[in-house]
Amino acid sequence: ASIGLSAANTFTGKSSPYAGNGVLVSNGSAVVKGNSFSRYANSLSVTGGTLDAINNTFTNHTQALNVSGGTAYLGGDTWSERNNITGGIAALVSGGTAYVKGNTLSTNSTVFSSGGGMLLAYVNDVSGFTTACSGCSESTTSLKHNYWGSNDPAAAMPGGLLAADWQA
Image (cartoon, rainbow, N blue to C red; front, side, top):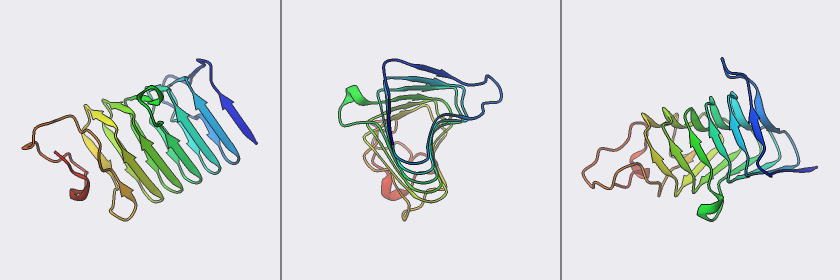
């Protein structure tokens, strides 16, 4: 089965503590485009199947994307397809595969978290964070070619980022 969610929907969960999923993909495929999500534990959750999420806004969440199986694409091929993700963890991957590209990620305490599966994140504009990645390893994550909030070649490597992924 396939589903498409677009046309400026607003998904709002419970105010405190954040709970549940805004959209859960367990099989089939889903395209989530042009929506706003706030106050969910997982704004988007993928346990199987395929998710494409472009041009969405995520605020006040525990994780914008939680992948435990299947494949998720967060962001598109042009700047008009980027997602804006503020607060919480942008992507938590414990299984499956997540591609996070071309998004604006701001004021996320921890930007990415990996406990398994594959996380590939590139050409994201990342700012206002404390930890780049929790649980990242060279065998399960690639965070190359992101902008980490500084053009200074002498800037310190962000906490949690692997040396192989650091470009100043």
